[in-house]
Image (cartoon, rainbow, N blue to C red):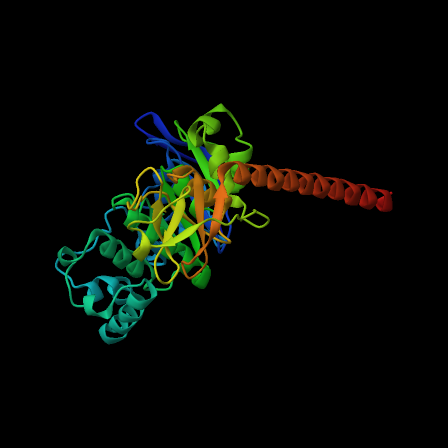
Length: 376
């Protein structure tokens, strides 16, 4: 567990972090999010004393970090930065082995651990002997994560680690981090300026305002549902209702059938309306329309059955036919959904969630009254 107690950082009269009091729970991902200059990165770097606070106390697992030698403290935590920060003159395996070697582990054991971590972060063993310049940006970031994990630290600090890669690679790295967290259960502090990334990754989100003020800390659903003030509402954005759909799976969503056509029979086919074109394995390849006979119309994302209502709505809204295509886990066509049906299901799920919260609050009050009555 990491605890900030009235922590302030001032640079030349300008307050970067203003009396921050915050608890980061053990074994969870806590995301610091906010606009540039709000103090989120400064707060992160004060945990491992890359930045010293002007006042206040930071406690990590019961110890005041100011009482520990800075170098020892940093070697006890993993740290991943935006540009990976790999040493260009060292191979991948030796970059990963850096911290274990500094901690006195033999070269042979440290390299063996590094090779194990290549598998953990999804990199082929063939990359072990390459140098950073021979890797893609995404591969470099995976090496950076592996290096941070090399000494098996309980705490992992991640400072905008995925912001320098393209959107496709960024999505892959985000999913990889979630997979690693399910397996390893680290205490992770993750800094980003992207609210979508915060909502995807964070079990708790701390929203920082300009001037280093902590504006709100809560779970991602509460941040979207009930922003604490106008600043948080503005930062989250007007489309927070759309993001909120990501918290509901598609259980209960009606999936309709649709006409299908084999791709091999597209040429010369007579169509009465929009038709889903599938390959021989039953996987969607696109759409066909009477307005463009014999033409495969692409466009529209796919919704995997069991995924969130957000992906279902996205599939419907991005489809040229106005119907979202639903697939199973093997990518085969299941049916279609319309935007109106998705929104109606979202309303039902939201109402159910509000009713459950109200019942939970009522139960908590009744329990407290019962305990108070017993005490008297």
